[in-house]
Length: 563
Image (spheres, rainbow, N blue to C red):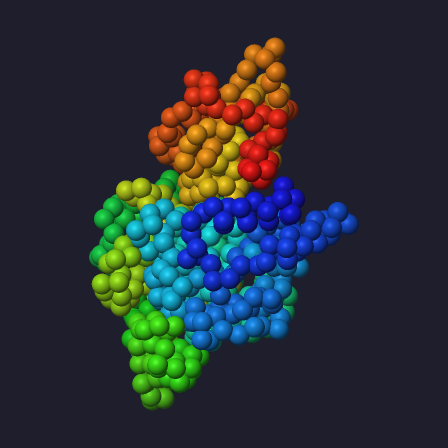
Protein backbone atom coordinates (compact mmCIF):
# COMPACT_ATOMS: atom_id res chain seq x y z
CA UNK A 1 0.00 0.00 0.00
CA UNK A 2 1.36 3.43 -0.93
CA UNK A 3 1.45 6.23 1.61
CA UNK A 4 -1.43 7.93 -0.21
CA UNK A 5 -3.54 4.77 -0.15
CA UNK A 6 -2.78 4.18 3.55
CA UNK A 7 -3.61 7.78 4.45
CA UNK A 8 -6.90 7.63 2.53
CA UNK A 9 -7.80 4.37 4.27
CA UNK A 10 -7.04 5.94 7.65
CA UNK A 11 -9.33 8.88 6.91
CA UNK A 12 -12.13 6.49 5.97
CA UNK A 13 -11.56 4.39 9.08
CA UNK A 14 -11.62 7.40 11.40
CA UNK A 15 -14.81 8.70 9.78
CA UNK A 16 -16.59 5.37 10.25
CA UNK A 17 -15.13 4.41 13.65
CA UNK A 18 -17.66 6.23 15.84
CA UNK A 19 -14.84 7.26 18.19
CA UNK A 20 -14.68 11.08 18.05
CA UNK A 21 -13.33 11.27 21.62
CA UNK A 22 -9.99 9.85 20.45
CA UNK A 23 -9.11 13.07 18.62
CA UNK A 24 -8.61 16.70 19.58
CA UNK A 25 -7.61 17.81 16.08
CA UNK A 26 -7.11 16.15 12.71
CA UNK A 27 -5.01 17.17 9.73
CA UNK A 28 -6.90 18.65 6.81
CA UNK A 29 -7.49 15.77 4.36
CA UNK A 30 -5.87 17.60 1.44
CA UNK A 31 -2.85 18.46 3.57
CA UNK A 32 -2.61 14.86 4.79
CA UNK A 33 -2.75 13.42 1.28
CA UNK A 34 -0.14 15.94 0.14
CA UNK A 35 2.14 14.74 2.97
CA UNK A 36 1.59 11.17 1.85
CA UNK A 37 2.25 11.99 -1.81
CA UNK A 38 5.53 13.62 -0.81
CA UNK A 39 6.52 10.41 1.00
CA UNK A 40 5.67 8.32 -2.06
CA UNK A 41 7.78 10.66 -4.19
CA UNK A 42 10.74 10.29 -1.82
CA UNK A 43 10.46 6.50 -1.99
CA UNK A 44 10.23 6.62 -5.78
CA UNK A 45 13.41 8.74 -5.81
CA UNK A 46 15.26 5.98 -3.98
CA UNK A 47 15.19 7.15 -0.36
CA UNK A 48 15.12 4.43 2.26
CA UNK A 49 12.42 5.47 4.72
CA UNK A 50 11.85 3.01 7.58
CA UNK A 51 8.38 4.42 8.32
CA UNK A 52 7.26 5.06 4.74
CA UNK A 53 3.49 4.78 4.51
CA UNK A 54 2.94 4.59 8.27
CA UNK A 55 0.11 6.75 9.58
CA UNK A 56 0.92 8.23 12.99
CA UNK A 57 -1.09 9.96 15.72
CA UNK A 58 0.50 12.28 18.27
CA UNK A 59 -0.59 12.95 21.85
CA UNK A 60 -1.76 16.54 22.14
CA UNK A 61 0.93 17.63 24.55
CA UNK A 62 3.53 17.18 21.79
CA UNK A 63 3.94 19.93 19.19
CA UNK A 64 2.94 19.29 15.58
CA UNK A 65 3.36 22.25 13.22
CA UNK A 66 0.04 23.17 11.64
CA UNK A 67 -2.09 21.80 14.48
CA UNK A 68 -2.74 23.46 17.86
CA UNK A 69 -1.27 22.06 21.07
CA UNK A 70 -3.85 22.00 23.85
CA UNK A 71 -2.49 19.50 26.43
CA UNK A 72 -6.17 18.63 26.85
CA UNK A 73 -7.18 22.16 27.88
CA UNK A 74 -8.80 24.48 25.27
CA UNK A 75 -7.79 27.63 27.18
CA UNK A 76 -4.13 26.55 27.15
CA UNK A 77 -4.01 26.08 23.36
CA UNK A 78 -1.23 27.57 21.24
CA UNK A 79 -0.05 27.15 17.66
CA UNK A 80 3.51 25.76 17.58
CA UNK A 81 5.87 27.21 15.01
CA UNK A 82 7.61 23.88 14.45
CA UNK A 83 7.38 20.18 15.17
CA UNK A 84 8.66 18.69 18.39
CA UNK A 85 11.98 16.98 17.70
CA UNK A 86 10.44 13.50 17.96
CA UNK A 87 7.73 14.46 15.46
CA UNK A 88 10.27 15.94 13.06
CA UNK A 89 12.23 12.68 13.19
CA UNK A 90 9.07 10.69 12.43
CA UNK A 91 8.40 12.81 9.36
CA UNK A 92 12.00 12.43 8.23
CA UNK A 93 11.57 8.64 8.46
CA UNK A 94 8.53 8.74 6.16
CA UNK A 95 5.64 8.79 8.63
CA UNK A 96 2.45 10.68 7.81
CA UNK A 97 0.97 12.65 10.74
CA UNK A 98 -2.81 12.42 10.82
CA UNK A 99 -3.80 14.19 14.02
CA UNK A 100 -3.52 15.01 17.72
CA UNK A 101 -5.04 12.70 20.30
CA UNK A 102 -6.99 13.19 23.50
CA UNK A 103 -5.34 12.75 26.90
CA UNK A 104 -5.81 13.14 30.60
CA UNK A 105 -5.47 16.89 30.87
CA UNK A 106 -1.88 18.10 31.27
CA UNK A 107 -0.88 14.41 31.29
CA UNK A 108 -2.26 14.11 34.83
CA UNK A 109 -3.79 10.68 35.22
CA UNK A 110 -3.64 7.00 34.31
CA UNK A 111 -7.32 6.58 33.43
CA UNK A 112 -8.09 8.51 30.22
CA UNK A 113 -11.23 10.20 31.60
CA UNK A 114 -9.88 13.56 32.78
CA UNK A 115 -10.50 15.61 29.66
CA UNK A 116 -13.04 18.26 28.58
CA UNK A 117 -12.91 16.56 25.17
CA UNK A 118 -14.53 13.48 26.69
CA UNK A 119 -13.47 10.20 28.28
CA UNK A 120 -11.65 7.96 25.81
CA UNK A 121 -13.35 4.56 25.76
CA UNK A 122 -11.40 1.33 25.76
CA UNK A 123 -10.77 -0.34 22.39
CA UNK A 124 -12.11 -3.72 23.58
CA UNK A 125 -14.93 -2.69 25.93
CA UNK A 126 -16.30 0.87 25.57
CA UNK A 127 -17.68 0.77 29.12
CA UNK A 128 -14.14 0.57 30.52
CA UNK A 129 -11.36 3.12 30.72
CA UNK A 130 -8.71 3.32 28.04
CA UNK A 131 -5.96 4.10 30.51
CA UNK A 132 -4.01 7.32 30.39
CA UNK A 133 -2.76 9.78 30.16
CA UNK A 134 -1.93 8.83 26.55
CA UNK A 135 -5.46 7.56 26.06
CA UNK A 136 -6.31 8.61 22.50
CA UNK A 137 -2.94 7.51 21.14
CA UNK A 138 -3.28 3.99 22.54
CA UNK A 139 -6.87 3.48 21.38
CA UNK A 140 -6.16 4.84 17.89
CA UNK A 141 -3.45 2.20 17.51
CA UNK A 142 -5.48 -0.61 19.09
CA UNK A 143 -8.42 0.04 16.75
CA UNK A 144 -6.14 0.04 13.71
CA UNK A 145 -6.96 3.66 12.86
CA UNK A 146 -3.23 4.43 12.79
CA UNK A 147 -0.10 2.31 12.62
CA UNK A 148 1.89 4.09 15.33
CA UNK A 149 1.35 6.79 17.93
CA UNK A 150 3.42 8.94 20.22
CA UNK A 151 2.57 9.37 23.87
CA UNK A 152 4.39 10.54 26.95
CA UNK A 153 5.18 8.76 30.20
CA UNK A 154 5.97 10.25 33.59
CA UNK A 155 4.33 7.69 35.87
CA UNK A 156 3.04 5.08 33.42
CA UNK A 157 1.12 7.09 30.83
CA UNK A 158 2.82 5.29 27.95
CA UNK A 159 2.47 1.81 29.46
CA UNK A 160 -0.86 1.57 31.30
CA UNK A 161 -2.99 2.41 28.22
CA UNK A 162 -0.92 -0.02 26.15
CA UNK A 163 -1.74 -2.79 28.62
CA UNK A 164 -5.45 -2.01 28.80
CA UNK A 165 -5.80 -1.96 25.02
CA UNK A 166 -3.69 -5.00 24.16
CA UNK A 167 -0.78 -3.29 22.37
CA UNK A 168 2.93 -2.59 22.88
CA UNK A 169 4.09 0.52 24.72
CA UNK A 170 7.79 1.39 24.90
CA UNK A 171 9.15 3.85 27.47
CA UNK A 172 12.78 4.36 26.49
CA UNK A 173 15.63 5.31 28.77
CA UNK A 174 15.15 8.94 29.80
CA UNK A 175 16.97 11.27 27.45
CA UNK A 176 17.31 8.92 24.49
CA UNK A 177 14.33 10.63 22.86
CA UNK A 178 14.26 14.40 23.05
CA UNK A 179 11.38 16.07 24.91
CA UNK A 180 11.91 19.36 23.06
CA UNK A 181 8.46 20.55 22.01
CA UNK A 182 6.63 18.59 24.73
CA UNK A 183 4.41 20.35 27.28
CA UNK A 184 6.03 19.21 30.54
CA UNK A 185 4.25 17.27 33.24
CA UNK A 186 7.38 16.76 35.38
CA UNK A 187 10.16 18.03 33.16
CA UNK A 188 13.03 16.03 34.68
CA UNK A 189 11.09 12.74 34.45
CA UNK A 190 9.05 12.97 31.24
CA UNK A 191 9.66 10.57 28.36
CA UNK A 192 8.27 10.44 24.83
CA UNK A 193 6.88 6.95 24.26
CA UNK A 194 5.70 4.85 21.32
CA UNK A 195 2.59 2.71 20.82
CA UNK A 196 2.31 0.00 18.16
CA UNK A 197 0.51 -3.28 17.58
CA UNK A 198 3.77 -5.20 17.31
CA UNK A 199 7.12 -5.03 19.04
CA UNK A 200 8.99 -4.74 15.73
CA UNK A 201 6.92 -1.74 14.63
CA UNK A 202 7.38 -0.05 17.99
CA UNK A 203 11.14 -0.61 17.95
CA UNK A 204 11.42 0.75 14.40
CA UNK A 205 9.65 3.93 15.50
CA UNK A 206 11.77 4.29 18.64
CA UNK A 207 14.94 4.00 16.56
CA UNK A 208 13.61 6.65 14.22
CA UNK A 209 13.00 9.18 16.99
CA UNK A 210 16.10 8.44 19.07
CA UNK A 211 18.62 11.27 18.86
CA UNK A 212 22.14 10.87 17.54
CA UNK A 213 23.72 13.02 20.22
CA UNK A 214 21.68 12.67 23.40
CA UNK A 215 24.56 13.71 25.64
CA UNK A 216 22.50 13.89 28.81
CA UNK A 217 21.49 10.24 28.57
CA UNK A 218 24.98 9.22 27.52
CA UNK A 219 26.60 10.92 30.52
CA UNK A 220 24.06 9.42 32.88
CA UNK A 221 24.60 5.85 31.80
CA UNK A 222 28.25 5.80 30.73
CA UNK A 223 29.54 4.68 34.13
CA UNK A 224 26.95 1.94 34.41
CA UNK A 225 27.73 -1.49 32.99
CA UNK A 226 25.17 -1.52 30.20
CA UNK A 227 23.19 -4.69 29.65
CA UNK A 228 24.06 -6.34 26.32
CA UNK A 229 21.81 -6.08 23.30
CA UNK A 230 19.02 -8.61 22.75
CA UNK A 231 19.80 -12.04 24.18
CA UNK A 232 17.71 -15.22 24.06
CA UNK A 233 15.47 -15.69 27.08
CA UNK A 234 17.38 -18.86 28.06
CA UNK A 235 20.31 -16.63 29.11
CA UNK A 236 18.20 -14.20 31.11
CA UNK A 237 17.45 -13.93 34.82
CA UNK A 238 14.04 -12.35 35.45
CA UNK A 239 13.10 -10.88 38.80
CA UNK A 240 9.54 -11.50 39.97
CA UNK A 241 7.97 -9.96 43.10
CA UNK A 242 7.11 -12.03 46.13
CA UNK A 243 3.43 -13.02 45.76
CA UNK A 244 2.23 -10.72 48.53
CA UNK A 245 3.89 -7.75 46.80
CA UNK A 246 1.66 -8.05 43.75
CA UNK A 247 -1.11 -6.50 45.82
CA UNK A 248 -4.77 -6.57 44.81
CA UNK A 249 -5.18 -7.38 41.11
CA UNK A 250 -8.15 -7.54 38.75
CA UNK A 251 -9.87 -10.96 39.03
CA UNK A 252 -7.98 -13.49 36.94
CA UNK A 253 -4.88 -11.33 36.49
CA UNK A 254 -2.80 -13.06 39.18
CA UNK A 255 -3.41 -16.37 37.42
CA UNK A 256 -2.54 -14.79 34.05
CA UNK A 257 0.69 -13.42 35.54
CA UNK A 258 1.59 -16.80 37.04
CA UNK A 259 0.98 -18.40 33.64
CA UNK A 260 3.32 -15.87 32.03
CA UNK A 261 6.04 -16.65 34.57
CA UNK A 262 5.62 -20.33 33.73
CA UNK A 263 6.01 -19.55 30.01
CA UNK A 264 9.18 -17.62 30.75
CA UNK A 265 10.62 -20.62 32.57
CA UNK A 266 9.62 -22.83 29.65
CA UNK A 267 11.46 -20.46 27.30
CA UNK A 268 14.61 -21.01 29.36
CA UNK A 269 14.65 -17.88 31.54
CA UNK A 270 15.73 -18.24 35.14
CA UNK A 271 13.07 -16.75 37.42
CA UNK A 272 14.33 -15.21 40.65
CA UNK A 273 12.08 -13.90 43.46
CA UNK A 274 13.08 -10.34 44.40
CA UNK A 275 12.03 -7.84 47.04
CA UNK A 276 9.94 -5.15 45.34
CA UNK A 277 9.68 -2.94 48.43
CA UNK A 278 12.40 -0.43 47.39
CA UNK A 279 10.65 0.03 44.04
CA UNK A 280 7.22 0.40 45.62
CA UNK A 281 8.51 2.93 48.14
CA UNK A 282 10.09 4.93 45.33
CA UNK A 283 6.77 4.78 43.47
CA UNK A 284 5.07 6.31 46.50
CA UNK A 285 7.47 9.25 46.46
CA UNK A 286 6.33 10.31 43.01
CA UNK A 287 2.92 11.62 44.04
CA UNK A 288 2.90 11.34 47.83
CA UNK A 289 6.14 13.29 48.23
CA UNK A 290 7.68 16.56 47.16
CA UNK A 291 8.45 15.57 43.57
CA UNK A 292 4.92 16.69 42.63
CA UNK A 293 6.19 20.26 42.96
CA UNK A 294 7.62 19.89 39.46
CA UNK A 295 4.09 19.31 38.19
CA UNK A 296 3.03 22.60 39.76
CA UNK A 297 6.02 24.31 38.17
CA UNK A 298 4.88 23.07 34.76
CA UNK A 299 1.22 24.17 34.69
CA UNK A 300 0.28 25.24 38.21
CA UNK A 301 0.54 29.00 37.57
CA UNK A 302 -1.71 28.66 34.50
CA UNK A 303 -4.40 26.82 36.47
CA UNK A 304 -4.13 29.28 39.35
CA UNK A 305 -4.76 32.18 36.94
CA UNK A 306 -7.79 30.43 35.46
CA UNK A 307 -9.61 29.06 38.49
CA UNK A 308 -12.84 30.35 36.97
CA UNK A 309 -12.51 27.68 34.26
CA UNK A 310 -12.36 24.75 36.69
CA UNK A 311 -15.30 22.48 35.97
CA UNK A 312 -15.50 23.66 32.38
CA UNK A 313 -12.27 23.79 30.37
CA UNK A 314 -10.14 22.67 33.32
CA UNK A 315 -10.84 19.25 34.80
CA UNK A 316 -11.63 19.57 38.54
CA UNK A 317 -9.60 16.51 39.56
CA UNK A 318 -6.58 17.71 37.57
CA UNK A 319 -6.90 21.20 39.04
CA UNK A 320 -7.02 19.86 42.60
CA UNK A 321 -3.97 17.63 42.05
CA UNK A 322 -1.84 20.30 40.37
CA UNK A 323 -2.69 23.13 42.76
CA UNK A 324 -1.97 20.93 45.79
CA UNK A 325 1.39 20.00 44.28
CA UNK A 326 2.63 23.53 45.01
CA UNK A 327 2.53 22.93 48.75
CA UNK A 328 5.78 20.95 49.41
CA UNK A 329 8.74 22.97 50.61
CA UNK A 330 12.34 22.91 49.43
CA UNK A 331 13.23 21.09 52.64
CA UNK A 332 10.64 18.42 51.81
CA UNK A 333 12.20 17.96 48.39
CA UNK A 334 15.72 17.53 49.77
CA UNK A 335 14.43 14.97 52.27
CA UNK A 336 12.81 13.03 49.44
CA UNK A 337 15.91 13.28 47.25
CA UNK A 338 17.97 11.74 50.05
CA UNK A 339 15.45 8.94 50.48
CA UNK A 340 15.31 8.33 46.71
CA UNK A 341 19.09 8.06 46.57
CA UNK A 342 18.97 5.33 49.22
CA UNK A 343 16.20 3.47 47.35
CA UNK A 344 18.10 3.76 44.05
CA UNK A 345 21.09 1.98 45.63
CA UNK A 346 18.78 -0.82 46.83
CA UNK A 347 17.30 -1.09 43.33
CA UNK A 348 20.78 -1.31 41.80
CA UNK A 349 21.60 -4.20 44.13
CA UNK A 350 18.51 -6.02 42.82
CA UNK A 351 19.82 -5.73 39.26
CA UNK A 352 23.12 -7.24 40.30
CA UNK A 353 21.19 -10.52 40.49
CA UNK A 354 18.63 -10.15 37.67
CA UNK A 355 18.52 -8.62 34.21
CA UNK A 356 14.97 -7.25 34.37
CA UNK A 357 11.85 -7.11 36.50
CA UNK A 358 8.75 -8.87 35.19
CA UNK A 359 5.49 -7.52 36.60
CA UNK A 360 1.92 -6.88 35.54
CA UNK A 361 1.73 -3.47 33.91
CA UNK A 362 -1.12 -2.24 36.08
CA UNK A 363 -3.43 -3.58 38.77
CA UNK A 364 -6.96 -3.28 37.44
CA UNK A 365 -9.22 -2.36 34.54
CA UNK A 366 -12.07 -0.25 35.94
CA UNK A 367 -15.20 0.94 34.23
CA UNK A 368 -15.55 4.60 33.31
CA UNK A 369 -18.42 4.84 35.77
CA UNK A 370 -16.29 3.47 38.62
CA UNK A 371 -13.55 6.01 37.95
CA UNK A 372 -16.04 8.87 37.90
CA UNK A 373 -17.28 7.74 41.30
CA UNK A 374 -13.76 7.46 42.77
CA UNK A 375 -11.35 9.30 40.47
CA UNK A 376 -8.32 9.61 42.77
CA UNK A 377 -8.01 6.30 44.62
CA UNK A 378 -8.52 4.09 41.56
CA UNK A 379 -6.04 6.14 39.55
CA UNK A 380 -3.44 5.92 42.32
CA UNK A 381 -3.74 2.14 42.55
CA UNK A 382 -3.18 1.71 38.81
CA UNK A 383 0.38 3.09 38.99
CA UNK A 384 1.72 0.51 41.46
CA UNK A 385 4.16 -1.05 38.98
CA UNK A 386 4.84 1.97 36.76
CA UNK A 387 5.39 4.96 39.04
CA UNK A 388 8.95 4.07 40.03
CA UNK A 389 10.55 3.65 36.60
CA UNK A 390 11.38 7.26 35.78
CA UNK A 391 12.32 8.22 39.34
CA UNK A 392 14.78 5.31 39.40
CA UNK A 393 15.98 6.02 35.85
CA UNK A 394 14.80 2.85 34.13
CA UNK A 395 13.69 1.69 30.72
CA UNK A 396 10.48 -0.28 30.36
CA UNK A 397 8.30 -2.10 27.82
CA UNK A 398 4.62 -2.99 28.26
CA UNK A 399 3.45 -5.87 26.10
CA UNK A 400 0.32 -8.02 25.63
CA UNK A 401 0.38 -11.22 27.68
CA UNK A 402 -2.99 -12.79 26.97
CA UNK A 403 -6.61 -12.12 27.78
CA UNK A 404 -8.75 -12.55 30.88
CA UNK A 405 -12.54 -12.59 30.60
CA UNK A 406 -12.28 -11.28 27.06
CA UNK A 407 -10.10 -8.27 27.94
CA UNK A 408 -6.34 -7.77 27.55
CA UNK A 409 -3.90 -8.62 30.27
CA UNK A 410 -0.65 -6.70 29.94
CA UNK A 411 2.77 -7.41 31.43
CA UNK A 412 5.87 -5.27 31.69
CA UNK A 413 9.64 -5.63 31.75
CA UNK A 414 11.71 -2.96 33.48
CA UNK A 415 15.49 -2.59 33.79
CA UNK A 416 18.11 0.12 34.42
CA UNK A 417 18.85 2.90 31.93
CA UNK A 418 20.49 1.65 28.77
CA UNK A 419 18.85 -1.78 28.80
CA UNK A 420 16.37 -0.87 26.03
CA UNK A 421 17.62 -3.43 23.49
CA UNK A 422 17.89 -6.16 26.10
CA UNK A 423 14.27 -5.62 27.13
CA UNK A 424 13.09 -5.77 23.52
CA UNK A 425 14.96 -9.03 23.01
CA UNK A 426 13.42 -10.62 26.07
CA UNK A 427 9.91 -9.51 25.11
CA UNK A 428 10.39 -10.94 21.62
CA UNK A 429 11.46 -14.28 23.05
CA UNK A 430 8.78 -14.73 25.72
CA UNK A 431 6.01 -13.46 23.42
CA UNK A 432 6.85 -15.95 20.71
CA UNK A 433 3.91 -18.10 19.59
CA UNK A 434 5.53 -20.18 16.87
CA UNK A 435 5.42 -18.28 13.61
CA UNK A 436 1.70 -17.57 13.94
CA UNK A 437 -0.97 -18.33 11.37
CA UNK A 438 -1.54 -16.43 8.14
CA UNK A 439 -5.03 -15.19 7.30
CA UNK A 440 -6.38 -13.58 4.11
CA UNK A 441 -8.89 -10.74 4.58
CA UNK A 442 -10.78 -9.02 1.78
CA UNK A 443 -13.35 -6.78 3.47
CA UNK A 444 -14.24 -5.07 6.73
CA UNK A 445 -11.10 -6.49 8.41
CA UNK A 446 -8.74 -4.69 5.99
CA UNK A 447 -6.39 -2.04 7.40
CA UNK A 448 -8.38 1.02 8.35
CA UNK A 449 -11.73 -0.70 8.00
CA UNK A 450 -14.31 -0.94 10.83
CA UNK A 451 -13.48 -4.51 11.91
CA UNK A 452 -9.70 -4.30 11.59
CA UNK A 453 -9.47 -3.97 15.36
CA UNK A 454 -10.65 -7.59 15.65
CA UNK A 455 -7.30 -8.59 14.14
CA UNK A 456 -5.07 -6.07 15.88
CA UNK A 457 -6.65 -6.71 19.28
CA UNK A 458 -5.72 -10.39 18.90
CA UNK A 459 -2.10 -9.70 18.07
CA UNK A 460 -2.53 -9.57 14.29
CA UNK A 461 0.29 -8.05 12.23
CA UNK A 462 -0.09 -6.99 8.62
CA UNK A 463 2.17 -8.98 6.26
CA UNK A 464 1.19 -7.11 3.10
CA UNK A 465 -1.22 -6.83 0.17
CA UNK A 466 -2.24 -9.93 -1.79
CA UNK A 467 -4.56 -10.94 -4.61
CA UNK A 468 -6.62 -14.09 -4.81
CA UNK A 469 -6.47 -16.40 -7.77
CA UNK A 470 -8.98 -15.61 -10.58
CA UNK A 471 -11.58 -18.01 -9.25
CA UNK A 472 -13.73 -15.87 -6.91
CA UNK A 473 -16.74 -13.53 -6.93
CA UNK A 474 -17.18 -10.75 -4.37
CA UNK A 475 -20.59 -9.67 -3.07
CA UNK A 476 -21.81 -6.80 -0.87
CA UNK A 477 -23.73 -8.34 2.02
CA UNK A 478 -26.57 -6.60 3.84
CA UNK A 479 -24.82 -6.60 7.21
CA UNK A 480 -23.91 -4.04 9.88
CA UNK A 481 -21.18 -3.00 9.58
CA UNK A 482 -21.14 -3.51 5.83
CA UNK A 483 -18.94 -6.38 4.72
CA UNK A 484 -18.39 -8.43 1.57
CA UNK A 485 -18.74 -12.13 0.94
CA UNK A 486 -16.03 -13.95 -1.01
CA UNK A 487 -17.25 -17.07 -2.83
CA UNK A 488 -15.24 -19.50 -4.93
CA UNK A 489 -16.82 -20.32 -8.31
CA UNK A 490 -16.36 -22.97 -10.99
CA UNK A 491 -13.79 -22.34 -13.68
CA UNK A 492 -16.48 -21.57 -16.26
CA UNK A 493 -18.46 -19.22 -13.99
CA UNK A 494 -16.48 -16.06 -14.62
CA UNK A 495 -14.26 -15.87 -11.56
CA UNK A 496 -11.88 -12.97 -10.99
CA UNK A 497 -8.91 -11.97 -8.84
CA UNK A 498 -9.80 -9.97 -5.72
CA UNK A 499 -7.52 -7.59 -3.82
CA UNK A 500 -6.98 -8.33 -0.12
CA UNK A 501 -4.41 -8.35 2.66
CA UNK A 502 -2.40 -11.09 4.33
CA UNK A 503 -2.22 -10.95 8.12
CA UNK A 504 -0.38 -13.11 10.65
CA UNK A 505 -2.05 -13.89 13.98
CA UNK A 506 -0.96 -15.89 17.03
CA UNK A 507 -2.60 -19.29 17.09
CA UNK A 508 -4.62 -18.37 20.17
CA UNK A 509 -5.67 -15.09 18.56
CA UNK A 510 -6.99 -16.83 15.47
CA UNK A 511 -8.86 -19.31 17.61
CA UNK A 512 -10.52 -16.51 19.54
CA UNK A 513 -11.46 -14.78 16.27
CA UNK A 514 -12.97 -17.92 14.75
CA UNK A 515 -14.94 -18.70 17.92
CA UNK A 516 -16.80 -15.40 17.62
CA UNK A 517 -17.25 -15.35 13.84
CA UNK A 518 -20.89 -14.62 12.91
CA UNK A 519 -22.73 -16.32 10.08
CA UNK A 520 -22.62 -16.27 7.11
CA UNK A 521 -18.84 -15.72 7.39
CA UNK A 522 -16.55 -18.74 7.46
CA UNK A 523 -12.82 -19.43 7.48
CA UNK A 524 -11.66 -21.64 4.64
CA UNK A 525 -8.81 -22.20 2.20
CA UNK A 526 -8.21 -19.23 -0.12
CA UNK A 527 -6.05 -19.67 -3.21
CA UNK A 528 -3.75 -16.71 -3.90
CA UNK A 529 -2.57 -15.38 -7.22
CA UNK A 530 0.87 -16.88 -6.67
CA UNK A 531 -0.57 -20.37 -6.11
CA UNK A 532 -0.32 -20.49 -2.32
CA UNK A 533 -3.34 -21.70 -0.38
CA UNK A 534 -3.89 -19.79 2.88
CA UNK A 535 -6.72 -19.67 5.45
CA UNK A 536 -9.00 -16.72 4.81
CA UNK A 537 -12.47 -15.21 5.11
CA UNK A 538 -15.10 -16.80 2.88
CA UNK A 539 -18.89 -16.69 2.83
CA UNK A 540 -21.62 -19.32 2.78
CA UNK A 541 -22.84 -19.41 -0.85
CA UNK A 542 -26.51 -19.24 0.19
CA UNK A 543 -25.94 -15.79 1.72
CA UNK A 544 -25.08 -14.17 -1.62
CA UNK A 545 -28.18 -15.25 -3.53
CA UNK A 546 -29.71 -11.77 -3.38
CA UNK A 547 -26.55 -9.77 -2.70
CA UNK A 548 -25.02 -7.22 -5.09
CA UNK A 549 -22.13 -8.63 -7.13
CA UNK A 550 -19.25 -6.15 -6.81
CA UNK A 551 -16.51 -8.28 -8.34
CA UNK A 552 -15.96 -5.74 -11.12
CA UNK A 553 -14.58 -3.25 -8.61
CA UNK A 554 -11.62 -5.52 -7.96
CA UNK A 555 -11.87 -5.33 -4.20
CA UNK A 556 -13.86 -4.12 -1.22
CA UNK A 557 -11.86 -0.94 -0.66
CA UNK A 558 -12.50 0.28 -4.23
CA UNK A 559 -16.22 -0.39 -3.92
CA UNK A 560 -16.45 1.43 -0.58
CA UNK A 561 -14.52 4.41 -1.99
CA UNK A 562 -16.87 4.59 -4.99
CA UNK A 563 -19.88 4.74 -2.70
